[in-house]
Length: 336
Image 1: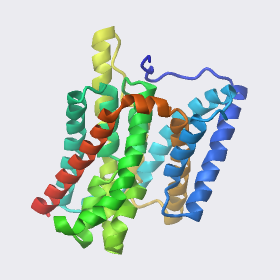
Image 2 (image 1 turned 180 degrees about the vertical axis):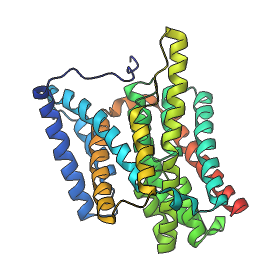
Image 3 (image 1 turned 60 degrees about the horizontal axis):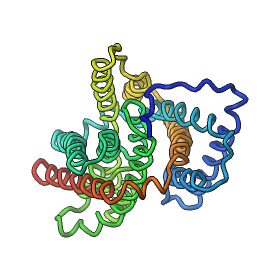
Image 4 (image 1 turned 120 degrees about the horizontal axis):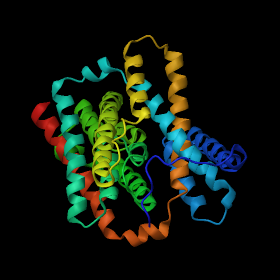
């Protein structure tokens, strides 16, 4: 399969976009309702699953493809920008130097280690980079943010999202069972959950058995990982495009605008000037936007392609998860 061209733009007319956009709106509505009925299930997870289901059944006409592609790209970028409003610098700094160093080490070593593991397993660079980003930062949302700046196949995106969903779900069950053997409880277990589990909703579910304090700590630690999404995407973007510029004679492009928008929103939130009501609206809007984007990405998942990827991708996901858990546990034990 030919690698997707980074930064490609749709030339479809508004009339051609509406069928796909309508499908996205309906899917987001269903995901939102499912979350209201079963709050333990993230709307983002439901959106991904819906996308995979409809993408592998003969239910989506060809007329929906332009709108799906447009919505996936646009909603993702706007959603990542609004995600910045969930983060405040003072809140993150309040975690303390030890926890922040643990988070940084977990992100860096998980990302770099996953790239090395992917190479050793003979997997593509694009897949390894997407898996490394998703497992190191914030799951499917991070995969979706990174896929626009690296050379990869559509199958790589689908596989990375499937792996994040699978191993993040398994972590919800595994971490509480491991809390006793590894000697973590309360806030420390919350730190471990926040530093090692992939999606925010999965973090909450994993930390819940340890109590409210563990959940609160886990969410803040998790959001401190999300802060690193912008610099990671920016660094990879510049590195990738310089590499292609050297090979193709082009000019290296600037950092993606949505990354700058994300950082701007973090700064706005950090001023304390945004009312709580506005933050609640922004949080809901972020969920809806990312749900739409992830539904679009899920609709591109082809289960047959995942089967062809074979056990090597599953092994990469397992090893990357274990790496994140091991590094974060070590940091909590050694640094407090």
